[in-house]
Amino acid sequence: MIHIPEFNIEKQKWVEGNVLWGKKLASEIRKKLSEDVKKLQHVPGLAVLLVGEDEGSKIYVANKEKSATEVGFKSIVKRLSADSTESEILSIVNEWNLDNSIHGILVQLPLPGHLNERKILQSIKPEKDVDGFHFENIGRLQAKVEGTIPCTPLGVMVMLQELGIKITGKNAVVLGRSNIVGKPMAQLLMDHGQATVTICHSKTQNIDNFIKDADIIVSAMGVRDIINNNVVKQGAIIIDVGMHRAVKGVCGDLDFEALKDKSLYITPVPGGVGPMTIAMLMYNTYHNALRSKNI
Ligand code: GUN
Figure (cartoon, rainbow, N blue to C red):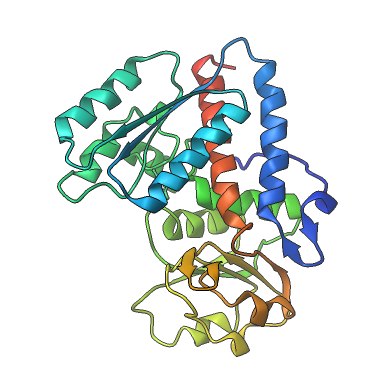
């Protein structure tokens, strides 16, 4: 069974009108987790590896470190230069695999081009893989067996569940087919949500045909303004996973202003799904720590 954790956060703490403030929900979830962590005999540990100088990755890793410390985890961050070798990285991961005080291991992506991303991600012990990128966890999700669910799609499912909206039988369109977001998102909406799911991607012809019937749209395209706002159904739920640094500031894949009034609910960027990804990383680490003690 696929389990989506319930946090039971009051809607008035994070939903304003029809805007879903993931940032506020994430903060409430971190508060709950920090209370749960205090009750544990053992401190959960999260180890993050950052290789190279990617500016976006540096910010993400700093946020993960801050969040882990705030919820009361032991937090380790190792920063390596861009010319690090595969064997250096594999030996760090192996050291963390063997360290009983570490329950979550995350290698920040993207890795510099000379490194074999697949080999490095598969070297993480599946029970310490807090990203859900290990083949064992991908297979578990596919087979509907409990495992680790990738943080961003898990964050979206938690938002929908906390809203208390029934999505059984609804038409969901996922824009994007990445291993990190699109594919696991579609799988969760279908298997947990029991929605009818369509995945559209960069080669899909006439995306409007699919968007016009969508009750739920999750955009993880990484491309801006991909849909025709005019064809979006009145009353659709719009989740924007995109993140772009534009001249006017950070924005998502979709046009928030154009879609806000016709949507039943909509996530902003920034302040929507992004902070939920980090909150789910904290949850996955906490959950791994519980599992490691058979709690
Ligand atoms: N880079 C962008 N998103 C992610 C993520 O969810 N996990 C890891 N490891 N790297 C990322």
